[in-house]
Length: 592
Image (tube, rainbow, N blue to C red; front, side):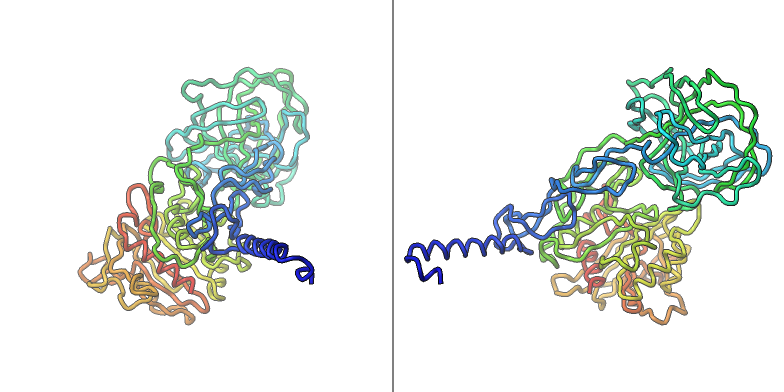
């Protein structure tokens, strides 16, 4: 009606305004970026720390630079903000853990040498611990009140494997300095106490940190703080102390059982030698209970003060932009690590604009392979795996949620478990996690399980639940071919969805072969994909390196080797181009 009331030029101008508004709306709603100019908003990848824009060439990209409000999920941090595409906060460990004043002890009863296994952010170690050498009561040196006055720490002398020196930048209430930390020589175990009778139980798992403590020295060209006067307040009163010099860095650690020991992963302790200047402590006996056992101790003179602290390794520069579907940037670390130069070409992506399903890669079982580069211990060896698949339109993320919380509610289409690690011979995936994962698959989920040579093959319970039997053999590098029949040329995975997706050979580099159980679960149907031929070494002939399983309403692909599914600095699918298409075919089959 309005258009009829104005002249031709006004009607034309109004139509142009309406048309431009519709085009602008179409650009904002764009899922494919097919015809949109560079910078047009597109599908949100779910990461508040990335941008979501068309690149002008038909692809929705997600460069770092997002500045939305975020939460890193860590109660020990403040001022959470986006940095380099990741939500990070400033670590304030004193806000979530207590310090500890450690006293020499004399073990009265109940202790013996025991095996201790632990993992922290620096290493996995196993060794022996004797009776507690010190006992540490909660204390504050910053004037605040203790957070958990009923929790103490028993300090055990530890003897185990050596690890290379690691440089850390450590911050406590007195400042920041650089240090080299060496092998672990103490473990601190969260402990409940009673002055008269044995405590009823140890602390509940994940309510308090345990710690692995390493000897410490000043980094080259630096010095350590020394002779610091401080007032310490704890359950035995207020005392003036002089802190002589830092002697140990104690990092949060899982002790004995992965996933049960760390309450606050970024809150550590920096332990100083002390001189007690104004008090003499009368002998005091306490009864204790912790994860390593029960006993009684006599507490003697104070000799060490541990202060809440945070530590980080020197930040490695980003070698890539990390701008695809929220893929993190690649950083170069020592040893076996991702190939940051890897640039896969995906001629016909399955999805456009990061609109594909989410694939979650598991790092919660000490996995040797995960996506996000963090340090030498976890340099992101499956970064190449993720980059290949984000080029195919998928969104690939590390999953930080334990399986018992993640499943069955996750909206992810595929879960990837690659080389789960274990502590000194235990099962890498707990019975509870096996049950949750298998039930999720049976109801329609898809699992890619990739194992490898020792010590990455300890998934016995999960393999049994899937109807597979791990062999005792270790594979060597081997190329499976369609021509020789070792690559199943009749399979959907080998042929893909089009002639251009067919693969003729697949290379694995090492690995652990397996076979199908003679009495598999009734809901499982198996299609061997990679089979060692009769002329393979005798201990490998007839065994599998890859199998596709229809498991109830879901699907599983099990690979006996992981290196051929990613790109690393020394080997990987960048050297075997058919492996790239093979990986995509596996994922497409799981996604069907």
